[in-house]
Structure formats: C-alpha cells, structure tokens
Amino acid sequence: MDKDAYKALKETLLSQKKHGYDLVQAAELPEMEAYCRTYMTFLDAGKTERLCAAEAVRLAEEAGYRPYTRGMDVKSGDKLYLCNRGKSVLLAHIGEKSLAEGAQITAAHIDSPRLDLKPNPLYEDSELAFFKTHYYGGIRKYQWVTIPLELRGVVALKDGTSVCVNIGEDEGDPRLVITDLLPHLGQEQAKKPLASAIPGETLNLLLGSRPIGGEEESGRVKLAVMQLLHEKYGITEDDLTSAELEAVPAVKACEIGLDRSMIGAYGHDDRVCAYAALRALLDLAKTPEKTAVCVLADKEEIGSDGVTGMQSAAFDTFMEDLCDAQGVPVRACFEQSFCLSADVTAAYDPDYAEVYEKRNAALLNYGIGLCKYTGARGKSGASDADAETVAYVRRLFDDAGVIWQIAELGKVDAGGGGTVAMYMANRNITTLDAGVPVLSMHAPFEIVSKLDCYETYKGMKAVYQAEM
Ligand code: MN
Ligand code: MN
Image 1 (cartoon, rainbow, N blue to C red):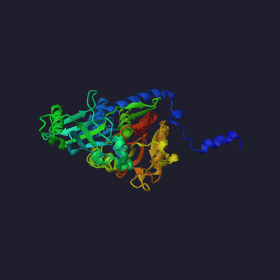
Image 2: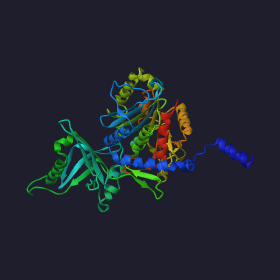
Image 3: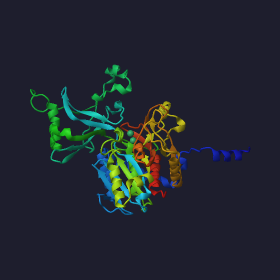
C-alpha cells in the first residue's frame, strides 16, 4: 500500500480526535472571549441558587421573557418563564410546531456545594464566636478551611417578610473563615486519611473575638456578634432558625493561566452549563421549530429531591400547563421531547492519572463532553442513553459545528456520579448527558476552559434549534 492510500484509509476509518484549538474558527475567538466575560459576570452575581435564579430572571426579562401564570395563552413566539420559590427557573420559547411534536429541553442545576448554617448556628467557645455549619453536597472538607468565605442567603421572618444577608461581597466587607491546626501541632491529624482529618463538626465559621459588657458577664462575644447582625439586618438569634444562610468562597471568577485560556471560580458546577443553557435560549434569533425549554434546577447536589429539585412535580406542572393551553396531553409532549441534561463532567487531570481511563476521559479544550451514562458500580443510577440518542446528538452537533467529545466519569469502579438525566428519562423524555469538563470539581475554586464553555453554549443552541 502506498503512503497516500494508507493515509486516506486511516483518515476514513479511524477516529481523529482533534484538539479544540485546531478545530475552532479564528473568527469565533473574539465571540468566545466575549461569551466568557459575560459568564464570569453571571458567576459573580449568582453565588447561591437564589441569587443565580434572580440573575437568570433578570436576564430573561431583559430578553423579553414574561412571567407565566396558569391559564395564559401559549402561542408560537411567546417567551415565558416561571421562577419556582425563588430557587429554580423554568423558561420556554414557544415553537412554531405544537407541543404535541415535543419540546427541545436543556436541564442544568444552579445549586453548588457549600456550607449551610445549622438551625441553631450561633455559639461562643473560649471567647470566640462561631456559626455551626452543615455541609451541602459532596465536598472534600479539608479544602474549605483557611480560605476566605462570604455569608449569603435569606432570613425568613414570622411576619412573612425576609431579609437578604450579604456579608463579604462588597470590597469593604469583612470575611469569615474556618480555622485549621498549625503543622507544629498537626502531626496526629496529618496521619489521618483526608476524608476524616477534618471532621464535619469542626467546620465552624469564626465570627468574632471582641466582647461587649462588663467582665462579670458571660457570652459577651456572642452577644456582640448578634448585636452587629441586629444592627445590620434587624434579626435576633431566634430568627436564624428560619434562615437559609450559605457560606461560599469569597472569590470572584478570574482568568487562569498565562495564556488566559481557563476560568477559575466557585460554582462552575453547574452554573457553567446553566449559563450556557440560559444564554443560548435568550439568544435565539427566531422562533424555534419546536418549543425550546430551559430548566435551571435546584437540589441536584443532594439528590434532586425537594420542591425545587428535578424530581419535583413543578416541572411536570409547568409543562402540563403549557400543553393544556394548546390542548395537548403532556404525556404526548414528553414522549416526543428530547432533553440534554447539561451538567459538568470530570476533566482529565494528569496529576491523578490513576483514576481516569485516558481513552474515555474528557479532556480540557476538546469541547462539550457527552456522557452516554454516568452512575457507579456497573452504571447503577444512570439513565444510559440509547445509541440512537447519541447518534442524534452527534448529527446535531456536527451540523452546527459544535466541538464535542464523548467520555466517562473516571475509570470503571473508581467512583462515579450522576445528575438530573435519569429524572428526565424516567418521565419518558429521551435524554442524554453532556457538559463542560471541570478540573478540581466541587472544590471551592474550580477550573474550566473557555473553549469548552463556548462550545457548550453552541451545543445548547443546536438543541433548541433542532428541526427534528
Ligand atoms: Mn453538577
Ligand atoms: Mn456536582
């Protein structure tokens, strides 16, 4: 066989996995940079699910979306949204075709791992005041000590009003922190496995050290802290019982690397896909063929349960209301629908090569990562998309010039994971997982590549614009 024939045969028959920067059009790069800048702004505005939902609503209204209420007309071209209890957002751009032809859905989540305050959080020990926390989602506890944290969230009062708490966002604000042992006294701790070296009950936020009142009094630092909280927010210690206050990293999104090719931030999981799904919907230039639906869900990190999670009937109710307005049974809509479950995946990390299977690992800068299945111990807990669905998305992405790769989350039996895909698939909606590869996932500061962010945005657009 001559050299040219060999080369042609190889190119025809063997997979050509190409680096994203060898595929991306130079003309697209400025657009990619601009997209990533707006994404970074979105991240800084939405450090909790509530803040993220509020920012999504703000952007949607700016793009002409109107709040949906049951009984409204639902006709082609309508742009509607529904915010579920301030923590999850459902949006729909009603398509040319009837909902009987199905919807093109993307579903991402806007909650991220963090430290929630306990219902009785405030205490004083050894003349230092602290808040007790209970971590939310799969964190590696040792990563959350000795880093600056902010406190964000709401305190709901008995009179039905609520107070927004924001300590740490403004430049002049103080920060909170969780302490750790000094190495000099940490020898026994250092012998422990990572998972047990920092017990959950030591994740206490340091709040203050300066007492008020006379020296004969006790609990003076705690009272001083409560006095400050009362001055700023008008709340008492009892009000903290009906609060959702979250300690999140006090760090803004920034470019990473000398080449500025990456973004470091708190909460890429899964706001990086949520923003792509939202932005792509808001950017649709014309009414899509099928109704385009974007779901920004809460509670994914703790199993998608609860009224604002993907297992909640809130999604079915929204879809059923839209379908009712067109005289379509929602079950008929679901069986014709497609959902891209948009959640991050693990990016291959050469420092920890042993947990990845390199042929089936998502690589940074190779585009949006498709996952046919997630799960653990033999795909358990995965919706495991069928071959036809993967073929459908291959065609969709290739036709739209989306740079993509397909991967698994780590080696067989190295661990595993899951997301909202199975809850969509269980509703009789054809579903495939896809998302941005992330380094240091679930850490207080996670890394993604700009190229992958932008290709994910293009992927979401391709889903909404699909004609079949
Ligand atoms: Mn996720
Ligand atoms: Mn996660």
